[in-house]
Length: 115
Image (tube, rainbow, N blue to C red; front, side, top):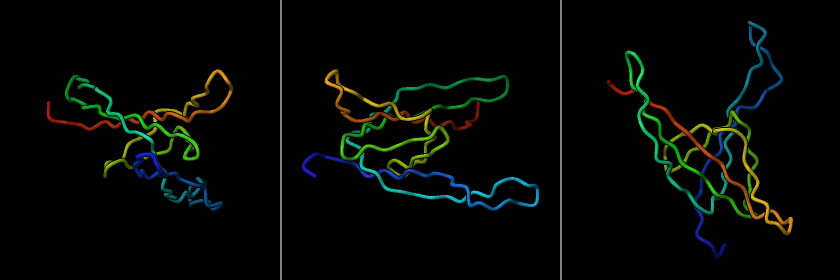
């Protein structure tokens, strides 16, 4: 590939076309490998509630052609063994010459910790 890349896994829940006993759609987990041009950590902090603390972490994935990826807001990504939730859809990085340079995906993850 010539450029350093990092393999990440996109996890998407896909409708099977079936419904459960409650009439809700049955979904299945579909994983696909994508190659990020870069992974940047996001500096976040702790959010304190009345009785708990949520530690929020995340990262930003950078993709360049031909390794761009489409992202839905409910997609998840496994990066370096940790599963994150996509924070919205991917954002296209378009140069003023109207050529797509790549896309950016922001990921977040929250964990309850003892307060």
